[in-house]
Length: 226
Image: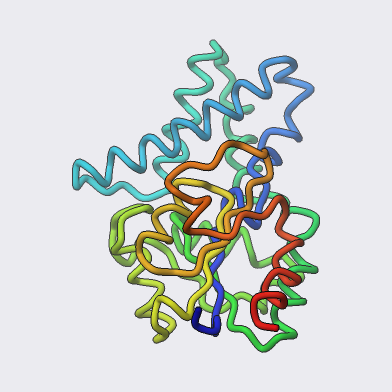
């Protein structure tokens, strides 16, 4: 196995906790909060895949808004102020508690660290700018450059072209199984963060290193290179 020279991270659901978009609004949402969060994410992903298959790209900002509108309608919620607040929260997601320490540990190993995400450049800039680890992540690559969403191979190829490193020397980290599967098929060395302990799919058990938390990554990398 080739030595890893750089690591690309997915942003949404990997470094940043999607549930934190809904948490500030649980008082208003009550027992609908979990259903809304799950449906919002489900439709967000569905709309990206449908857009790619149809060759009708709409950026992640528009798709995120449409997905939220559907989720709110499904829950029979008509509250423009709440909708605006949820979108604002999505643009300021909280990182997972182990994200910063993980990134700093990896940077100490002289690895290049970056992001490869469905988010627009503006969304990603807003998401990362206020974080203490922002300077550790360079490059931050958006699918906007190729106008197709993951898991299309063109997205992962964009990561290769941006880094100028062969796929087999790039580590890719995602908390989304479908994304990890796409990256593994492309040829990256993949680390799937399976926080929910869900069954393996997309042949990830054989093609990826499966972790239960982001914080396990530095020690696992050390074991692979020792």
